[in-house]
Length: 205
Image (cartoon, rainbow, N blue to C red; front, top):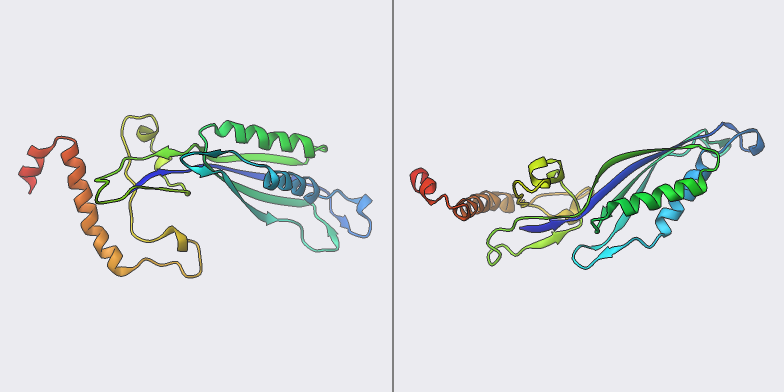
């Protein structure tokens, strides 16, 4: 079972400029220039790490960056996703907004924040049988309010490997999928016993 997952910080940067022929750059305003400067600063920043969750990493997706090499781009857009290893996500937000203030001198950039949360420690089940480990991705667990406010706990487990996810050879082994059904049952029974529901179990089994 997974004992913890990294946090997440997602945002979109939209940049507006003015189209013109690239032979006459003074007639337009490049939407890419401030965006690329901000993204370059983000890529080269030494982001903080954590003794438990490891390094904070970042991935950048350039969604749009102009229409042709001979046209000054009037619009550019990028989406950035951090895999956050520290609880102080606000630190990352302050750094990013500082880069925007530094490189967006003409007010071309629009910042839109998406899903954001710190790393989460999760409930484990029978650590001798199911060795716990940390993962660098995030899940929908942060959307569960009762987990985030401490009223209940979450268990994360499933067949397949994240190392092949989103690739051209993504798969889940059929035998592993079948075995997961048995494992789910064992975990549920273990968790019910942990909650002192032995009487309930006897009546249902």
